Length: 206
Ligand SMILES: Cc1cc2nc3c(=O)[nH]c(=O)nc-3n(C[C@H](O)[C@H](O)[C@H](O)COP(=O)(O)O)c2cc1C
Image 1: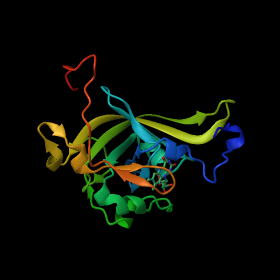
Image 2: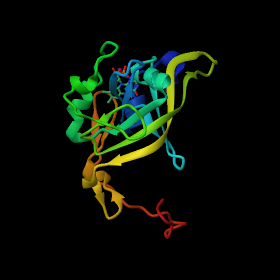
Image 3: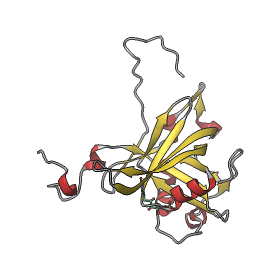
Image 4: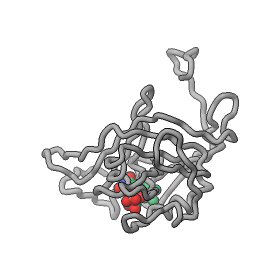
């Protein structure tokens, strides 16, 4: 099969784009609104985009609460979304009114951060406190604004549940992060494969 993307066309019943770029990590983003009310929502147009400085980014279709709050307050928190919190994560995706606290909606405990004001998910295996670098609207090939908003933050502090630290490493497989696939599909990272670089097998891990 081959097709071009003209006018957002796909010959398949559902656009396979998100099933091809899969699995995607989920940025479970907590913020505070301008009145100080907590907000929590999942974003799978999300990834780590730089190390040292450690930076992460997520994109929002429309200026939803998370990008708006991050822009207004200059802060957001990444919470790791894992298999054990899958249903809670899903509830926090509900389209709710301004000021509704999705931590309460999903029955999740909040825990304080140290350097930023938004709370984190107390039960999360890891959380990253971030300061906003930018929130910009994506522009398409024709230079037209898309109403897709790209938020970048720099990590300034990290929380890890000690249960997931083994031999000086974060044990990703033990934490069982969720990955977002296409349609309504998810996957779980519960196994890893070590593959050393062929040109630098002795390379120190950083
Ligand atoms: C697993 C998952 C991933 C999602 N990823 C995105 C995303 O990348 N961008 C987006 O705009 N919405 C995404 N959504 C939908 C938002 O979570 C949803 O619109 C939510 O209500 C936004 O909340 P907020 O307005 O509090 O930020 C996703 C939903 C789920 C369940």
